Length: 426
Image (cartoon, rainbow, N blue to C red):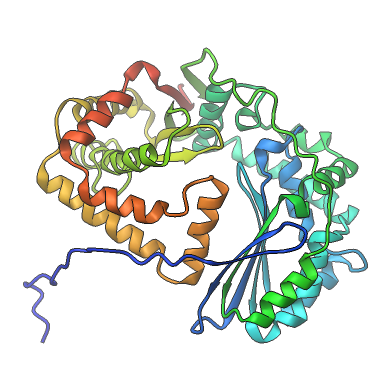
């Protein structure tokens, strides 16, 4: 019988095995990355364009274009398209990030060849049905209305606006009326200019064989779209004068805090080091912020910090939802924790806990071909070194408490942080 008084044995992780993909290049320049496994009877096909929110010249363009892309190819209606993929047990997921957008196809291997031609047509010859566009406009308008009643959403949008300003897509604030200002011809033009073979990479994972790769190349090796991607003219302009701002939300029953600091463009080595520091600060359940502000003070049910990696900068963000009366004490305690990390080395016990936790997270993140593919996608889209994961693990093993203190002392300058608070002050 299991004796629950005896803890399970632990074992130190000495190495990791990050599998690199098989690489192909199609005649039209599309780079393709393959993660193959005989034990996964499903194919995941990601068609990714190096074009996201930051490439928009008008609010909502990438979101609308990407949503409509999966509705139907020319010659089919939306209902016919949905029924077709459902029949074969296939699922299509669209996504938009700051830097990328595209479609993911999940399909049982035995039906892959049935589905591939229609999926390729979705991307290369989309129909952009007007009826679906009108429905999307109304849905998006209602979604924005609802989001503007949420404190966390408002604070999140607010902090980005304070960091990047009104003239950069990262800083744009949305209103319901923005849905009415966009038209279908603009969406078609955006799609044609951004969803192009010259701006595309393909990631294939699952039970992949040579015939599958051959068929994908057959359908995706021709040219499509027309790359005329534009970066926002103000991409190098950071921050507004509003280092601290309150966003009033009537009838809100709680408040939300977002604090952030723009760390500038970081090298692989720098983002690995700061990532370790961030985990200590607020990156897991046993972090400094959680222990102090949640467990000891009881100000909130949760508080965390994370890094957002953009093309030309990385931003450290700290966020929490809490009662309005605890906003000021929480901000004070956040700065206290920043100061402690910058002035006093962490204990060996805490450092070992962090190393074990991050090691486990790394192993979990590469547990299977789909996870490998997802990590690889992030490395490619953020222009990180292909050996980043191994580099991260090696650095984690060797980093010292003194080095962590030195990093914190360098970046945790109170005056550099922006604060956005959303709630009802009444």
